[in-house]
Amino acid sequence: MKRKRGEGQWALGYREPLNKNEENKKNDDGLNVRRRIIDIYSKAGFDSIDPADLRGRFRWYGLYTQRRPGIDGGKTGSLPDEELDDRYFMLRVRIDGGQLDARQLRVIGDISNRYARGTADVTDRQNIQLHWIEIESVPAIWEALESVGLSTTEACGDTPRVIIGCPLAGIAEDEIIDATPQIAEVAERYIGSPEFSNLPRKFKTAIAGCASHCTVPEINDVAFVGVRNEAGEAGYDLLVGGGLSTNPMFAQRLGTFVKPEQVHEVWKGVVSVFRDYGYRRLRSRARIKFLVKDWGAARFREVLEKEYLGYALPDGPAADAPLPHRDHVGVHRQKDGNFYVGFAPRVGRLNGDLLNVIADLATEYGSGRVRTTAEQKMVILDVPEERTQALADALAEHDLQVTPSVFRRQTMACTGIEYCKLAIVETKQRGMDLIEELEKRLPDFDQPLSININGCPNACARIQVADIGLKGQLVVDENGEQVEGFQIHLGGQVGASFGKKVRGLKTTSAGLADYVERVVRRYDEQRAEGESFAEWV
Ligand code: SF4
Image (cartoon, rainbow, N blue to C red; front, side, top):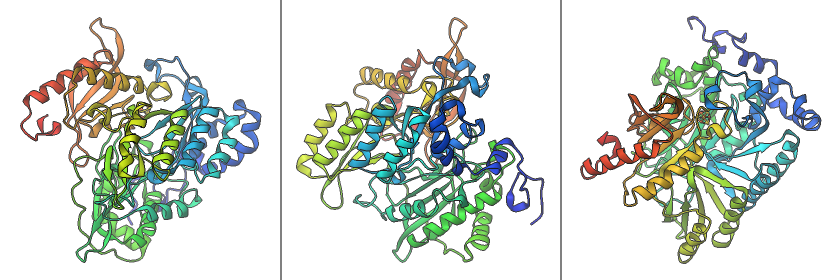
């Protein structure tokens, strides 16, 4: 292959690290930091931590330093890490496929109460994040998690992150294929393996066979989407190269049909292409989407088949269009005749006590099986029909609503300035306040409408694919002061279009509810029958 100006692709001979991140990874595998945390740092304390571990390799185990409280968003980016870093950590527990049982949930709840000041947020990648973790507690937390089959391995870092899956895998009436065995196989074979612990950047996987495409496959680095081929066999359509952040791109179909038993080797092939050909020179171009954009789907498929699989995959059909609602909130029948009950905490915020309550209710009313969703929601499975209302009532006593307003159902918020060092503005409380205001001001509004709130230009809460996407930044208020606010993106739709960024369309945080109310009222007055927000915009 002709050697072009290098972007740091290993396969083209660029093995020498071209930036500090690459150098750190070459110096020592991120996975090796586990031993140092157990043997040294947890005993000798925060000040003993090597900075290259603290701000680099810790992520390989889901650990980030939190933002030091009290630093305003205007200082983000202008202060060195040492001043932004708190002595406490965020810890991300990976929950592949969002699959939990009551015992596991109780363990996370107890860890939250014991070591994390009661914090617990469900993320939009089905993880649970804890805060206020001290380094001294980490070995005990790992031991507790591992005793019930959970871990934080590769929950962050330049690694294959959590594999997201449909919360209803195996029970949905309309599912094409139950992806649970494929998720388990990929996780067991490859997560924590040094073969894939030094990728150019993070790598996000979705494997699901559900009809609603609730894992948002279009914005994952690799996605296996349930489909039937012409012979009626169930398998997967393969997509690569999706991602949001500052250069949003939707994943491209490779046009193949992947049999269930091939998923793990095809996944391995795709991630190997990324590891070897991914761009490592610049962090801003190190996601697989840039490679896929430059190569196109046909070349990517050819390299995958010829250099990694050693055989050609058959052509296959595209998956059907997703059902309109991608979440799983409400009471719905399972294919075995039981029901599942999906409920909505506000913007994913829970706490240790609530996790224990949910575990108790899942045991009392169902089989103990609980799921997290990619919309910051949760689902209790296996509830007999006659007990669903009692469960919904019991959840409502804890403000966990099964029939929430559209605002509660469809508003998501990232971590924001409360804990995130990159944040410019507050998001979680802002999101909760916004929901409350909109519920008061627009009690009868019942059209689908997603509102996603980010604390900075990154895309942790997927602002580019929301009806109303709010990107945190400093704005100037009517007194000429710089205050927290948002740039507004309108009319994003997963897989179809990114929200339009209207130049100058911004609001202060204080004026957010007024702004959203105005837009929603206008939409409600002007929309034609059946016209979605994205079409109206
Ligand atoms: Fe932090 Fe920005 Fe991600 Fe929000 S979007 S969690 S502020 S990096």
